[in-house]
Length: 123
Image (cartoon, rainbow, N blue to C red):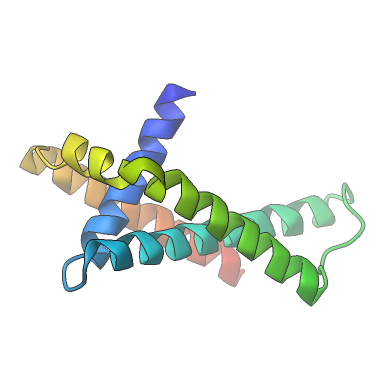
């Protein structure tokens, strides 16, 4: 569980660092929470399509209210997770001293995950 949370923290850090370049830190947390929530939502949708094709779940397209509810829950959870007790600052401190090699590997991993998610969604 700890390893998965560190991966999630690192993914948050990379997005936060990217979004915070030209804005203040609160915008960085909001923007990162929105992006992470959308990526999770897209991956849940991809999982739903897969399960529907395998006849594991009968309903594929949720109603608008279900979609909005899921997005609000995801965003609220992500925002609370990182903004509560200024946890984003602890994460920023932990990863701000990473080496150039780790930075490059992290960037490649983050971009790969986003591209993979979009490719799966497009199919």
